[in-house]
Image (spheres, rainbow, N blue to C red):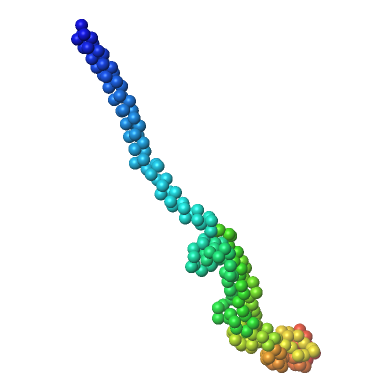
Length: 218
Ligand SMILES: [Ca+2]
Ligand SMILES: [Ca+2]
Ligand SMILES: [Ca+2]
Ligand SMILES: [Ca+2]
């Protein structure tokens, strides 16, 4: 009888063990699947990418703290602080000259300056208008080399000249009458050369007296 009880007990234990064994594999398989799923996600790159992404964002974070600060670099006009002195775009105004380069510094011509106008933090150079520059102008008779070509009161066509008509009567371009030319020298126009004034009407098919009538009364 005792032996039967022992056997029964063993059978019951085996049955219990078997039940537990049946349950455990299913539970372990679930856990294993869960772990396998996590591992797969990691290998797929989800969480693994976050590390390097955080690392690459650190320089940006530093840049935000001190935009453009990179020691030993010369400051330039771009809205950033290259030389890390806490001042942005200091001393980056530029000389400017929109005229022909050969004329800069000749006669009255001189360069101007344009102030840095870069948007803070933009990293993009930007300047305001060129101010204070003196550019070449048309040459005039004023003892100044206005067009900055190295010749006072003269340009590529020679000395400054102007039309002149030193007569009280007649009109340049009418009949025989013509204007002359006066040449500038040292800021003043000289005598009128080549002008033709009216003269007595003659029977020559020419309006000698420059009144618009040809050979009248002659
Ligand atoms: Ca000139
Ligand atoms: Ca002049
Ligand atoms: Ca006439
Ligand atoms: Ca005439």
